Amino acid sequence: MLKLRSGRTLYYGKGDVLSYRTYAAPLTVRPIEVSPYKGESNIIFAHNITFSVSSEVLLSSFTEGDNTQVVATDSMKNFILRQTAEYGGSTTEGLLAFISERFMKRYPHIDAIEIQADRLPFSAVSVADDSGWRDSQLVFRRSHNEHASASLKWNRDGDAGILAEHESALSHIQLIKVSGSSFYGFVRDEYTTLPESFDRPLFIFLDIFWTYEDAEDAFDSTRGNYVPSEQIHDLAHTQFHAEQSPSIQHLIYRIGMSILTHFPQLAEVRFESNNRTWETVVEPEQPAGAGVYTEPRPPYGFQGFTLSRADLGDGGDKA
Ligand SMILES: O=c1[nH]c(=O)c2[nH]c(=O)[nH]c2[nH]1
Image (tube, rainbow, N blue to C red; front, side, top):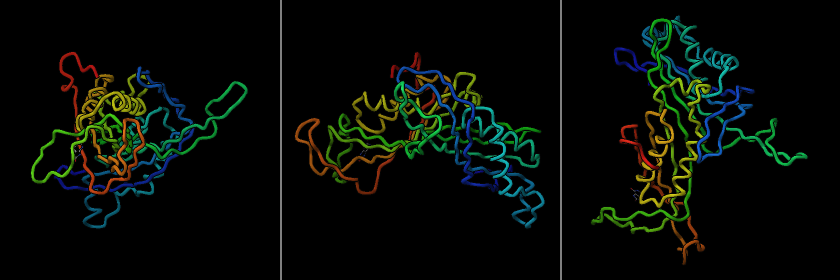
């Protein structure tokens, strides 16, 4: 939310700016051992962008209906789409920085910008030819699974914008582990009806957010330090798969330690999780036996947690 120096909230902008760019520069990333991900063709580089601006000189547009300094949100949409054609990089964060920097230059009366984008994921379909199965370079399917996103805030300093905040994210992860999770030892008192569970089918909704020590690493993948959401996802999978979790609280802590250990270029990692554990209808009689579950009834539980490099301590974590 953008504010004036006086502390007054003042902003306007455009949401749902849908931008389907084709043939952006391919992304290549440094591989990590727990992920097969090495990069992305970026043949489709698509985003849903939200853009807003703030400025002292816009006050009169609210108080007096004076539109002389108002860049129409329709023009903002056109600006975003046209600049997207000119972007030469390969990351969502880089695209948002490019648009913001150009906007600050073009409209010197704008003091601050907030820009956010959800990547619209498309994955190549598999096609067979004489040498076997390969990814089509022409046909893609829209994915409605988890997606990457990023947000940036800029404040004007002279001719340019100075980056005030940045965050990258992987949103709407939904993971179920059918066995190997427990929840016991919690406070038992007159309000407790929940039985202790030593092996529950743990279904979590999870959003993971991260910030870089130096945001240039997010903007410019050629520096070799870009952290792709796919590798973050694979680290989260690996941790969930490998460990017996005593709670979601501890699970997200362990995922966070693993992320900060693998990526020294990150300053912080943040989690928002939901507990969507299936309700048991028919208890399995033995491990890996037939059980039947149904959707849990509301309400749901949630957790939030932030880790920074200070949490790694000396020598880092062995996660
Ligand atoms: O992982 C969990 N953490 C909790 O704090 C909690 N509370 C609850 O009812 N179930 C769970 N599960």
